[in-house]
Image (cartoon, rainbow over all chains, first blue to last red; front, side, top):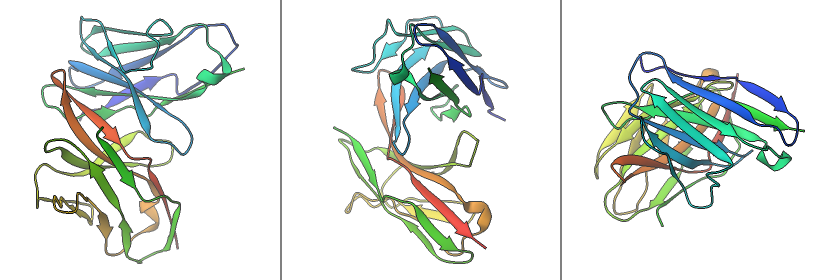
Length: 114
Length: 114
């Protein structure tokens, strides 16, 4: 149980375009979802926390207008990278938690901006 | 602020060798401590956890003891297998805004050779 999926697993987009990444909890209701960014040989850095039906809470230094997060249902959250640039290329990971506090992680999405 | 420091890798061992990956933390209050594992191409999975001082978390032959006096949570396994090859992350949780926020170390890549 407690499976989280992400789609797509990898995406390449051109500079200036937007790209949407989906995160789904497949077998539980996720009241809270988290979005992380992972650079090569670096730790996961929390970008934002979202609760179903409310606005996301962004970490300091994360541009909320660039990284749009929507958590419209208890099983789906989306991260949209708007006007992507090469420096946005990274590995994006989501996690979800339900009634307990434990976070279950998705497999990640590799974004490459050319 | 709260942080996690873990030994830098990569770590390369032969099968059946003893493994130690060091992890120390800095935190206000009394965090819970975790080890996550990320196998190639997969999302992070919780390996073990400890919620209070002197607790020992264990799973799949791995162990870690919450040492408050040394602010440490070192991961150990007596005899590693090739299938243990993965990246290991030490983490702590903070209760923030009604949800638990994970703070990760940078990760340690382990390669086990046959």
